[in-house]
Image (cartoon, rainbow, N blue to C red):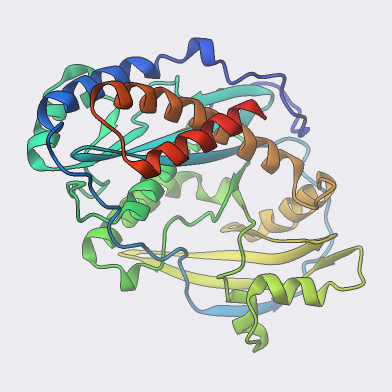
Length: 355
């Protein structure tokens, strides 16, 4: 992201995703041309086993949040990803939208690897030998493992999105809100060494900027951090909504969680928030940033209760991802062949672009 501007105001940008400027179609055209040569007669690949969704560690209840003011300026971002199933390969397409003080930053068209490819070694070798594709298509995990047909697809999607986010946050000098946890990745101890090594590498990339990040976690249906601290059997989503019943705004006590990813150990501080009918978690590895992060999220809450800037980043990253997916699908349909499920995803992408 590029510095500049002083406002962190969460206004919907007058931005049309700049579809006319996207050059990703060159990547997709060349990739499908290559796949049509080496994979046209191969079977469709499955997604692999699903991965777990969130890191977890010992949780300590610290006390109430305290008083502070919101942030005067900040950046915010979100990433999105989609899967396209073609003969002989699974193509994973990631996208990112970031706003840094009013400056828009997107991947694509910014040149950074935004496509992942799960395929045989034969197909991977052909892609890696192509100068056009080798710069923008990821064939291996951050730990160097080949994205073969057995590599968990959920993990590939996570790794792609986190890589894009790491690139964006390390290009900025502002406090940045990310849509999701500040410590990336699923609970590693149940994943196996190759997946743990990938997320350890992604965390290493993020560490220099970790103290400047605030995470907004909207999906709490599988989270049990607050529930563990309070001895409840509910999910954090149900518990937060219940604790905040009858209140215009509810903010839980502060929790501290110690997380270990490979050799890296970090602590993060978090609190759970209910605004109207929405529950979300605000977290940061920097205890001094948690309170301003919560106040900023509350100040910019939408009619649904979610921070407006997070909704903006989510919407734009998804539309950008849909545009990339449609490009990839059209070339794949013409040159390689696409699976039945990909037709459904294509219709969903078109619908998202029309909204």
